[in-house]
Image (cartoon, rainbow, N blue to C red; front, side):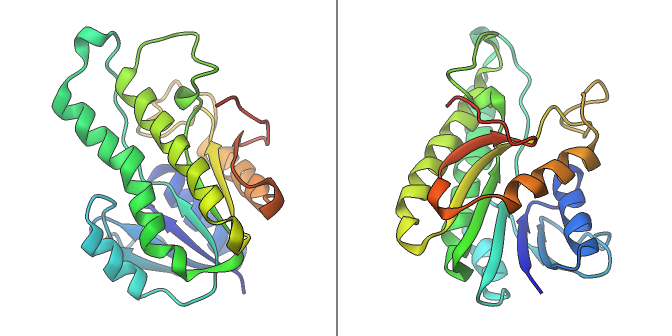
Length: 218
């Protein structure tokens, strides 16, 4: 039975990832920040916060060796527009959760991932410098751009272990973060993400793609 760890599964995309992988008969381990109890049968719930290394270490200690897939999903939104609206404290919090947090989780748990396994993180086209034609959203854009840089660097570090690392854009998804006006249903996004993840290979590590498999500019 293949195994997956989903970091950040309390709601939205992470919750649906846990549900779909469990339905596909994977062994699923999913982190939440506080006891949840709603992840369903077949999902082992672990308590962890990506800003708390001690909690990540405690969760990692409960994982078996030889994990096939690690998905880094935890993240928060930020909706300010022009530079005048950027709040330093909020910026720091968002950068910590979105950019540093997934890398801390990867650092803590990647020893549990088997050689030849996969690490995938949820990023966003808003983190693309090359595709930024609209401006605004400084805090969120910067957090995801920093995450992308970290993932690209992690891909290089883990090449010797033949672990495929990818930054994934899930689409504009109808979640609490994405809002009711978003374009993509959670189930459709996750179905697409699972297909893309299944196709990731060590020789193509370090990619930035969307849930349909389209390559995105860094």
